[in-house]
Image: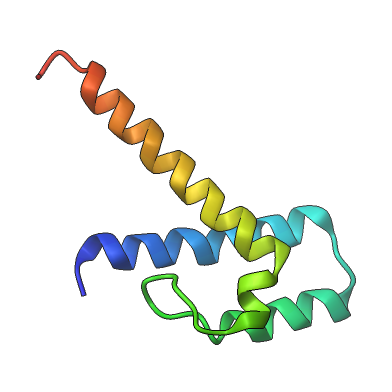
Length: 81
């Protein structure tokens, strides 16, 4: 596994936890999502249909895609090119 895959998984996991805490969800909802996070691979991918449908997982993956787009855009606009 490459470092970028590990970085992706770490970002998604931390983003999910961050939003769960910010939303102050019930302990039951927090526990369900927390248990689903165990089914996530180190790279942030999953084969679990329940996790794939979880709103916090979807939001975290979308945030990762947006972060990588912004990173690419900064690289393109940099003067080092």
